[in-house]
Image 1 (cartoon, helix red, strand yellow):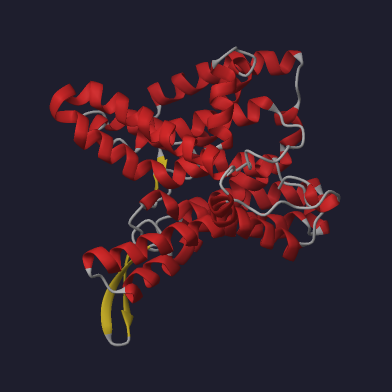
Image 2 (cartoon, helix red, strand yellow):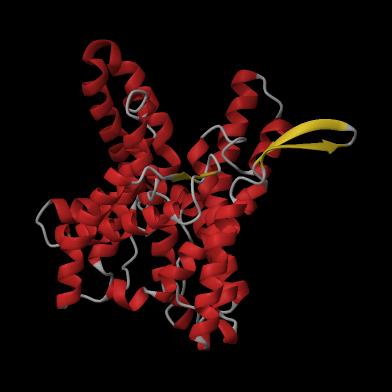
Length: 357
């Protein structure tokens, strides 16, 4: 996420556009009213709309900082808005609905999609954990300097991580003499291996992803979207990390990777386009705010508009509202000091540690 008031280091425009495409699909996928009769279309979207953010985070990792400094910086970017927003919601729930603060605090600290009122926020603490684990792996000399070790680690994380996805879902356990059903571990740590796979792969391929031109790149821009459409026409495997769904260790992973490649190819094609390219790029910069705030906006817009406009019109306007209003809030947060202090990472001084991570 970028601070809209602070001059940024040079960016690769197609990366922001890819993030914009990804977050637009996240919001679209959360419009459940569109997909009750079209579950296959939802499967296509969920097959890659979160893996692409893990992958792109890996592309942008710079492992020059110390691990503690990196952890603190990522906490500023991800955990600060997470706890700020959820604390405000908790206080409101206590004041307006008479809920117990301890219950809301426990849900916040457990921090997965089953405990949070605004479900998409589960991704923030999870992404923080994945970044820390991936950063630690990258800084290990054996991983960084030996291609065979790096490749073996990627394969192990992909296969083992895929198999581990459903293990902590609907899991009966005994706690203090009581039987409970676990639906995902705190901060979604049970998804850590598969998340590290996507992020570490992004880091491994960063030079190719960031390369600006070349014949191979132009070919990929045509081939990747075609392969994506062909794959989903022929292979039904998908995934949904929040619901701990991973249909097949190989096929679901391939679906995610083809989706990531297709989105990057489309992003390269759209980045130079007047109007659309900058618009998607700004959505990409605001993607964290959109992830946090789109659910209540989109739901409220749908409920208000559906009686008058029907499903199609209300769904379209609710989707646009879920993108536009959080983006405006992102722009405002950079200009209002209290919001900037509560929701945006503190600016870092120039120097090696000022790299974007």
